[in-house]
Length: 313
Image (cartoon, rainbow, N blue to C red; front, side, top):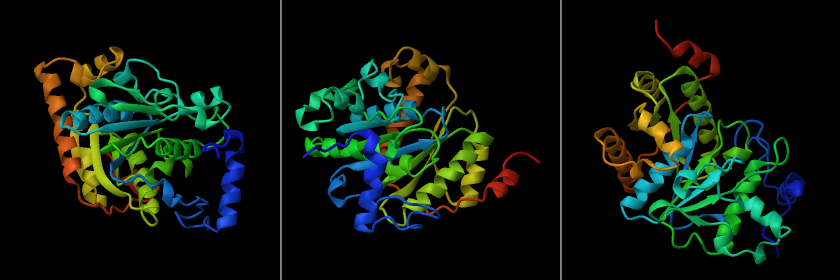
């Protein structure tokens, strides 16, 4: 039996499954939601699972890749799953744009039994295992469906059994239930944000999505990673107001920009004091996350309230 259904039939099949099983009740995952519940057989057992969210362009892939390396540096076996159709989550780890799960499946006419693990899992820097889920063509299908099917394929090939940490690097803002699907697998959701209006406004909506998913799944807010910012005053003020906390602060450093252009992680950029300080910040973040973080039950603001809240007098 095939693990995958062709993406063109994804939406139809998801609706049929939901109707047949009675598992898609309006309002279960939040007002207006029609999400299908996670198949219990697709749960990721044994590994700590983190989903990285944040405003588009805020540096989620850079954060995810360097955090993956940091986990590997403290001796953990790491799998990073890129959840963006651009499939650029892992290129600093692998030095290439690796083919996506969807690309590979198209080559075998969506017969996953013909695939080998090396066809879609690629080893990156310091042993980090890398997968790019890919996605349907722009304007068609559901990216969340692709994420779910990628997890199915990984389980089918027993690739999650020897993994300590799984990191989902998730596309842009949470704008639909589909791209919230990694929250069904994650233990902790982390938000990457800069110290500016747009990032924090987006973070507030992400917090709302995580709160909705936490009603039915084990995912909880882990905290905020401040990125590309010299100061963190607005992030910290917002966190205090809704019940979040900052886990790390990655400064606005030109070395980060250079690392992307060199197609490298920051751990490959030498030991200049500025770079070393950022490496150490990622290492302490990995240690903190591995040790376990408190469940944060933040209460997001209404859009108009956060509009009035942010900024200077």
